[in-house]
Length: 421
Image 1 (cartoon, rainbow, N blue to C red):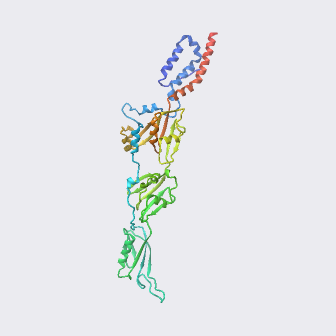
Image 2 (image 1 turned 90 degrees about the vertical axis):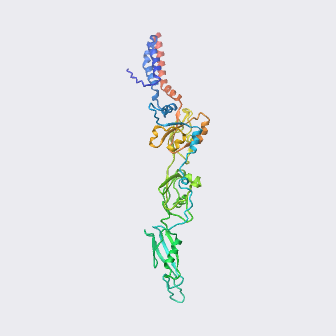
Image 3 (image 1 turned 180 degrees about the vertical axis):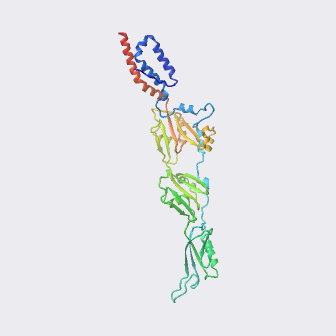
């Protein structure tokens, strides 16, 4: 039988091959080992190839080695050991905020009529027989003293037409100001006119609500002022759970996206909206990936806008007691440069594309690691990886070798008995 061996480069190879060589060179045992020599050589190949054994990912030492600078001094990612200074810096990172971006402005209470609004005008006169009142037609009826001018849209010139008053500018004015302007225009023509102006369809003073709401629409603003949750409720409310919903407010070319749960938890984030704002509601389930020596390797959803590392480990089934290296708990993500710079660490060379690749390491063998894990935030699309203990590699090698060693021991015993005979 021909046995072909493929020796993989490894630090274990010299010692194993030396042992096999010595066994083969010993004349006294050559005849005994000859039947099992192919088995011993196969074992040597398996041990020397231990770097190619199955695994769930890199070990703690592998990640440490990969984080070191190469010959040119370059680094592919930043390896950050989490300590109190790191989590304190993260506490200072500023999240997106509606109040911080747009300010806590006063409600938009004065609603001016705009181009595109629909307006209705009613004119009353003090007595019958005027321009807008009917004459007395009998001894009982006093005649009508009012006239309703049909609803009309405010034209591009910002004006509407009122009989006997001509084009009256209304854009930029409140209904009360328009009423006075019509009265002044009818002075000397109508009999002590009184005017009522009503905006029947508000188009200019609206907020557009779109996305994951029950009824997306243009929501008219009220004179008391409306907040962002008011217009969302007017549009029928959101369809998804609050922790999966994100709200984007677009105003004057600026766009800010925040979780809805942040608005619910902090009333200051429930800012007043203004005419022309666009509110977009989107469902974006938040997840993280658990990998390595955890109870479950899966994509796990959040049930809140953010969870801590200890909660993420618990949702992944905890640390596997039979496989894990507690000193090798890693969180892998991309950081924004302005946030990473607050850690006062050198940026890796791979950060030239705008985001910084970072691997955070938490030592859970140290009791203080539990407190750090409670403060360390896990964000959307993070990878939580727990490396295998170094002893797992030896266990895998022994699992592979034990069947061969059993066969070899049996062959040596048979050879020794044969030789003695």
